[in-house]
Image 1: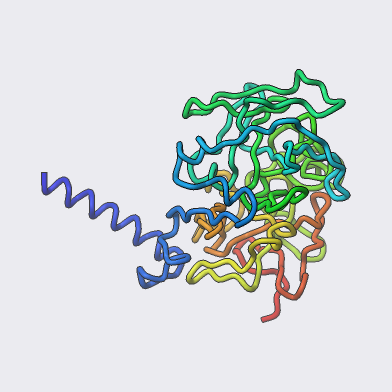
Image 2 (image 1 turned 45 degrees about the vertical axis):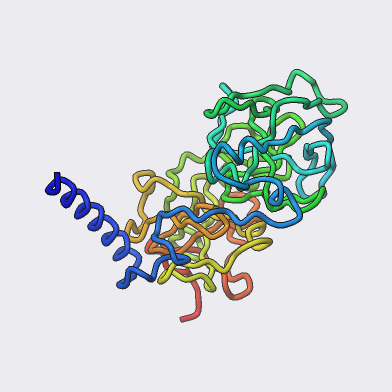
Length: 332
């Protein structure tokens, strides 16, 4: 028994050492935000908003606190178009990793603390919206969650007041919901309910053809040379104020509205990029972010379509990323 236990501990220690070495950290204490890479950092809900009512406790306790939406309403956002809200005016969101046919929620545990589920009971369709779009899905813990057009509905813990939409574009997978359950017109995919999420015109190439890309791949830009793009062909960026050793982020709060994080990508779902230091960063805000060479990577909300590089050089701190994970065009 002791022999088996010692062998198991040795394997675990070797795995941790390999991951630590991959991120250039020679000391075990120099881990992202004081935790080992891959460890879960609990979300830090914002005070005064849904974060003060949701997310207390873990798993089932957080889900048990789910509140119904009541009478749904629609507000016209200058940036997002028509957005559905609950009876209190808080924005409702949908998650690209969920499915609508059949309805399924894939936001559990820590995710459900940051994105409190909307309880299914007592919801009424917004005026002028087909009531048949309102439904429910049974979550893994047996609770019922509101669906609109088949998509599970959530709130965002950091929305502090009615009209906030701080969750828009977070992780490249969370978007305000339109009244029919599709993405709000100003969000990624132009309202597409494909669940693939992106920016601008829904993942089409500049020439108008649908992109069929790996989770992360390389594109030849006429000005910048070879740069990394996400599955929708959108340019990927690095922030010069971040750190890889130890892994830290300087882009938080409102910064994430303009620079959504790149959600974790399977290493096997990449083409032509550096695999060293290709690890998931568990941010202090509870969001999981992909890294290349241990550097956190982002997209830019100001890029309207694949091929855009509007984020290049912004503030002298944001740069497209080379296949080796280097910031393209950054001052030496």
